[in-house]
Length: 577
Ligand code: ADP
Image (cartoon, rainbow, N blue to C red; front, side, top):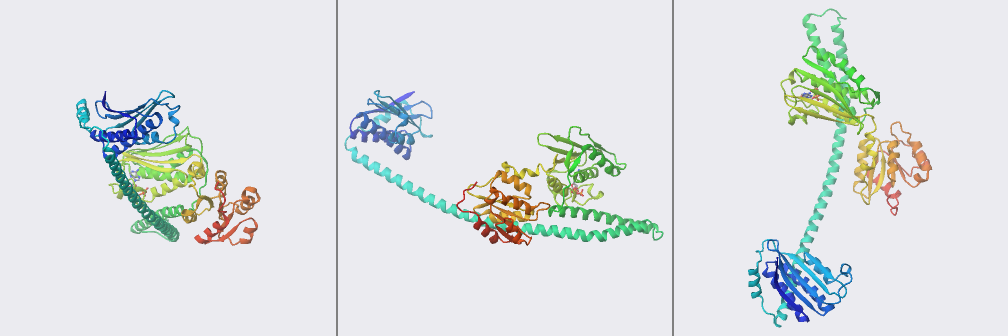
């Protein structure tokens, strides 16, 4: 339904003033707010001005479309002028302004057939519904046009302009305030980053110290513990004569305490070794079934006469696994011995499932034991974390097994998970790569590599994780970005993906022949363009420089040593690659 409101003829400039005023009055009567009224009046004036300029005038009709909200105010400006050949490609002017000010701007025009522009704007949400009666009282209220309005109209336009200017000023002030606030926040974030870096550094040092302490202490404990065990064995074997029953009982206690303690020491030593990166992975091929049969033999003594069945499911679908069998066995042994400790009746089931799509294998140990409440599932992976339960005091344990398993899993390129229901049982799973090395190589895949826009990649080849982190933090708030790898194989892979602006090379990388790598890289055209900064504990600066190193820094190096070498060697004009 369309309700006509008013039609005006435009044939003089005075008429334009009247059209603007009417547009203003009508939109005000229909409930449009101050800003919308100015927008509508300006849009209508712009189109009517076009009609006067290009067609010597036309007709402007105001209508209300629709009978239920949202109703539309429609303004139709029609002329009988020369028309436009292609309205869509009209240069920016009144039409474009009208398009921006109104919700819709439709143009119907053709050469020789005149132009009709239809402007539409939805009525405000809370405006009362417009009916024929409303229109009648509205038109009755509309003043008849008289020339005297010209001055008033000018005044009104002025007032609107002033209001718009004030609004603009306020927004500008608001923007300035927001920018200042953002700058403050930015400064705060930068300061926080610096603090975080410092704390991370602190934590790394503390963690390092803890690992060193644990490792040293464990070594120190081992010798006396071995002596106690050996001596108690001598006594129990009656090498030095008979023991009374009481003496035998006491020596057995000593022997058991020493055994327990040496188990803790071994676990601690393993943890410390993993944390300091000193544990070695010895990958070799093995079959799941043979691993299971060895485990079955190992775990049998634990079963004794417990009413629990230990079942190993065959896994015929899996290909042979290339990983560290001893460490996989260590993980599973811990899972199974836990399961047997916390299962009073039922079964403990060990299985494996091969996922061909991901190249991973999941080992599961499921039990029908007491289970673990969900709130404790995190605690059990913390060092010395044990759950208070009715069986805990009766069984042996240190609370170090699961954290060790989690670290071993990560080391083997996989992950560990647990699913448990209190009173029903638990399932501990370790998901590991079928081929060790495949998952760990993912660090050198394009998907995981993002060089921030505008940053120059610096390839860091360093096997010590702490040192890699240190270099990364030094380069963080600079024009450079550290891309770290831990050996030459990864470095070669990385250089297929990016061309670094410089390389920071550690000379001692396990078995890697870094001297030869450096020489060969520098002998090629590609390598000649990349500055190489050797950062090493090896004091052979002359040899390094002779083989092509552009800078030779002797460890321990400082941030300013590294940064000044990079700044000096990386060409500031050079395009990032
Ligand atoms: P430990 O067994 O030497 O105490 P772990 O780190 O292997 O240390 O296990 C930590 C704790 O997790 C256990 O003491 C026990 O409270 C809980 N837990 C581990 N496995 C199970 C299981 N299968 N069922 C119930 N609780 C378990």
